[in-house]
Length: 259
Image (cartoon, one colour):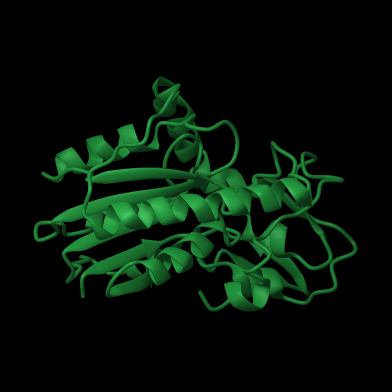
């Protein structure tokens, strides 16, 4: 095995990128971080390792942080990261953060890439119109070809970032409140007790009580539950009322359940 791709995805963007990149890389295997991180130690058996995940509050989702801490990289020759994000291009601090984490593990990031995708963080932002989404998908496809060329040739490349100095304060506050963050979810009367939210949560953080979802304070804030709800019955505080939901059009709930 030449390359191992580890991915984490909230509403399909990062999984789609991982799946498409998997097609373009030589001798490549695809593994979900939500499964891999459960192991005490993770030792890939490939020369190249890639980590694909969405930008969270200027840096990494908590599950990705935990995964990287367990990742044994001593025999890895080429390590790369692909981060999906909405918002302003290059704004973030994930790669500077990742660099520090990897330095503590005695290794370095060989290449890093951002890919812009439609926004799914609906508590703060609106989902872009379909035409804008289509343009983003086209641009992402073009960048994937560039990324695969870099990886297949083991070329070095570091993504540019701006405002990375904001990362520590923004991301640390997010991590500090994560164990209570799901207390902001609420369910409307339109809920039909289908149970999809319970099934779709990769962290078993939702259980049904009398047919209605209850969150268990083990949330990663991936927003799969609110975005995939077929009745749009889940809201986050008052910030998502009246807003469109988003999942990658090629990753419906039936696919997401199995990734």
